[in-house]
Length: 439
Ligand code: DOR
Ligand code: ZN
Image (cartoon, rainbow, N blue to C red; front, side):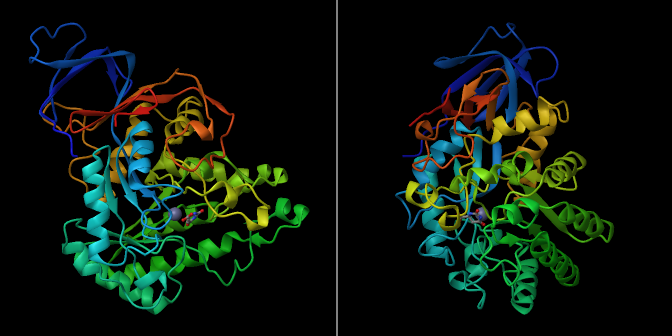
């Protein structure tokens, strides 16, 4: 059942965006009711829950515009409930779940089912992404208009996992989406260049005898889509940008005034093909882990705003699909519960970003892209209380079996990280605390 938002909560001793002196934040009726110097709030509502923030960092709740929750169809690897729990633990208050389920989310009934289920569970707002084409077949457009007008108000469409390769279909999708004020999020992969590919095409794959997925397979589609979106006056979004060439194309498109945005995953910021000699199937992902020079270009693009936001591409798979021969492994890895830790390590602990920047790329900017009015808001009185508290020095070790996701295919098994979300609040209600969802 959806939990009520009427109780009050006081989050004591936190630093807004990790800046300035500690404050106490009073949350009431689902909104931020008061922000005062730490220790100065004396009159509190009756039945007010107290939380000791221990000087930690308060940020707006994170928004992930690209996850796979596998319901319907593969509930043995993730459900809307388990994925919502993983999201809440990871500091997220809203997630967008991709339509490559079985059946595919290409109609309004299914879109509304996903939305309603997320609301009933109440741990995280779960928004369905509608497919662009019926059954992800790349041929006929799906019920985009009906999904957009329905209860789930779908404004984000993608055939993720597959590229809309036919340029005529893509053109029509962009034109139709533009008319709805919606966005086409493309999985950019010229699949005639990636047939049989299992890893990034480069010296490492050549050495290991793995068939390569060239950067140009992504970049050629991004380049084509820039031109199609320009002509259709549409908003095109690039899912999981993975190459330095894509970064250059984004810069060029911005200079031309094309309405293009992009996301990058934590794994494409941190990991590269140097992990391939392990032959561990957990590292197989689409697009593949590239090279260190790509990690660097993607990090810089995120700092500069050329890439708008971080999205996990959280992709649960069963152990039989990842603990197997590399060539047979499924593409994708878990991301929701480790995203903040990776971002903190790669961007904040390295001194390249501040916590305010993290709020921008993990909350404010993604919320803006998808048109969410109640998430990614400033930490100010009167704003919806969708919040997360980060302990920058929690210190923790990732164990796939301990994660809330049903699947355990994390590429960070056994790795130590410093930062971790310790409290997540959705519309004033605690949804996760210290690595446990508030079920
Ligand atoms: O690695 C991936 N896994 N990339 C995708 O685009 C799809 C996803 C999945 O559904 O597992
Ligand atoms: Zn995906």
